[in-house]
Length: 218
Length: 245
Image 1 (cartoon, rainbow over the protein chains, first blue to last red):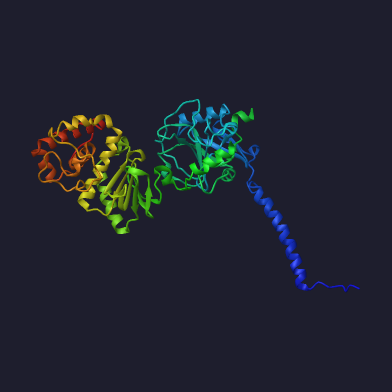
Image 2: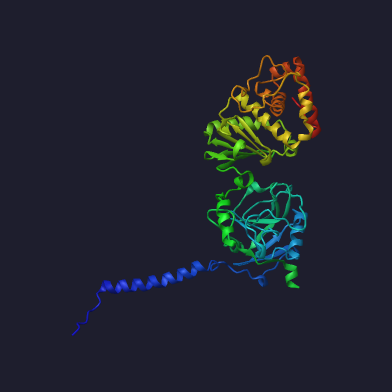
């Protein structure tokens, strides 16, 4: 006959600890897997803008990002950016260069498209719209959230590539053309995939779309 | 195919992530902002020893001591004050790096100009008089690169004695002396005899520095006189309001 063994107090504590550990492990796994879990959702319907014609809405994996464009600072560059947005050129284009905590760069229309991603040449592609001259003379505060055009390799012209700052960079004033600032949804930008060892990203995240607010409400 | 690309990429992109705004602009690591002057020149210094570039343009430099840095910064600022803001903008000079024990392709140097990055690098360890002149020497290299068409090298060579040939070795021992020569024979220093570009830069630096020695040599040495006029004439084409001392 088997003798019934009663659990000791320490065994009961151990069992409870194991149950908690299992729950914690599963929930952690879920949290880690879902990188967008704590990203605050941007609700466009609850927002109002003073100049809606200068608002663009970028859709990325973790939500919407609202960019307020500044044609008063950089008229030609903002015009170019709007043209590219209106022609839906940025849809499915990679964020190919990401430096954690500093900047996120994308917009290579030639080598960065999802269906035509070219890892060897990404970052050196051109659009079909030609180069434009940087507009760097007006003062602009390059704070976290600034959106600006990147320069070509030679460093004297711009095309379609842009970056979003994840940290203040006051020395960029007078160096890059500011396009505007992210007013909402910067946390979604901070979740864009990066590599620890390289500023170029293998299997990068993509811009789902960028639209002008005015075209979305129509 | 995709696997091949990944393998290629692993070898082709060994770029270490540098998350700082200065590196983003001039591709030199371990620098921090020291000061920005009224003319928009950004003075940078090394917070840690650094090395950058490859081959003949590889540079390395060390973190300078605070007192030495302060002294040489004030001296640099004083010398750069000579140039008008619009002139500096036109020649595209933006950054001045102050560091210690500068080496260019592993050879000790007092200064180095990188026109592409709109930067000059200065060794704060050097003697004050030479240091000041080197500021202007390096500034000329920036000017020369950006306005190459104005400084015709073959025209410059005609100023020299027909038998003279530049040594074409700016890194050879014995050619590096920046001490002003007493017997000039068309050249302010031994270093000026290495190449047309260095000769032009040396002449420009003496013209800006314009001490008693320079004035005498410009007046007495007809070759130096011609070279000085050539520099003055072409600098005024870049910026008409430019005034030599």
